[in-house]
Image (cartoon, rainbow, N blue to C red):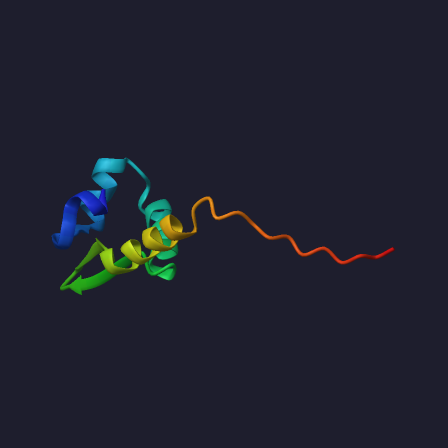
Length: 80
C-alpha cells in the first residue's frame, strides 16, 4: 500500500482504514518496517505520514537480483 501511495505516503488512520487492522497491530508492523529502514515516518502536526523508502527498497531488490541463483559454496571441515 505504501509503495502504491508513492512519495506522498499515507497517514496511519488511512492505512488502518484500508487494512482493517487494529491500530496497535498496525503500529507494531510499522515500527518493524521503520526499524528495517523500509519505511520512513514524518510527523505533521498530530498525524504521522508513512512512506516507503524507495532507495533502501531498490538497494535490497538489486542485492537480491544480483545474488539470485549464484549457488552456495559450502565449506565443510573434515572432522575425520
